[in-house]
Image 1: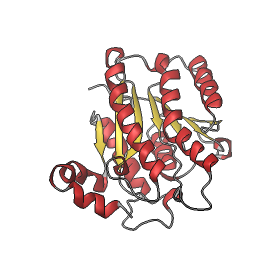
Image 2: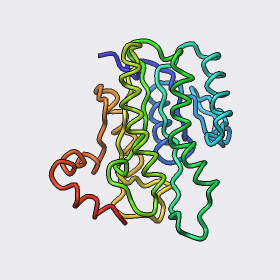
Image 3: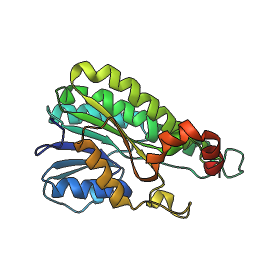
Length: 241
C-alpha cells in the first residue's frame, strides 16, 4: 500500500513547537522526511536538517489562507498535512473570567484553520497516497463540563473529517482522523490523571498512518467504540468533570 510516509516525504505540521507536535516533528525528521513546522513561534525552533519553520497565527483566518497559498506556490507536491495545533480553554462560559475573544481563537485554531489548510493545499496533495491527518479527541464523543467549546470543535473536526473523506476520495487524497485520549502536554498540565505520554501518542499516530487506517483510536480512546455501543451513559458520567 502506498502511504504518505512510505518514502522521503514533505509534511506540513501545525503546532510543532510543543506537545505531540514536537514529538511528531522529531520522529518525522529522524525518519528522513522533510517537515514544514507551522505555529506562532515556529521560527524559535532550533535549526535541523529537513526542517523549515514558518510563523503563522492559526487564529487569524487571513493569515492561514495566505500561508496555504504560499505553501502551495512553493511546494507543488506535499505528501502529508497534519492538523495538530489546538487550544483548550478550561474556563466555563458562566465564569466571570471567561474571555469571548479567547473562545473565538479556540474555534479558529481547532476547526477553521484545519479546514482552510485542507482547502488551500488540495492542489499539492492531489494524488494517490497523499493524506490529511486531523487530530481529534475522545471528547468529541463524550464532552466535559468545563471545556465546552473545545469538545464542540473536536466533534466538528470529527464530522468534517468524515465529510472531507468523501469529497477527496476521487482525488486520491486520504483523510485520516487520529482520536486521542488525555495526553500529557503543556495544554493539559494540571488537568486530569492517567495521561498518555506525548511521544507514545506520536508513535501511535505514525503507526496508524503507515497501516492505512482512516480512523486511528489511540490509547484509552480504543475503548470508545465499545463504550458507545455498551455503556454510553457511563462514559458521559465519567467524563462530565
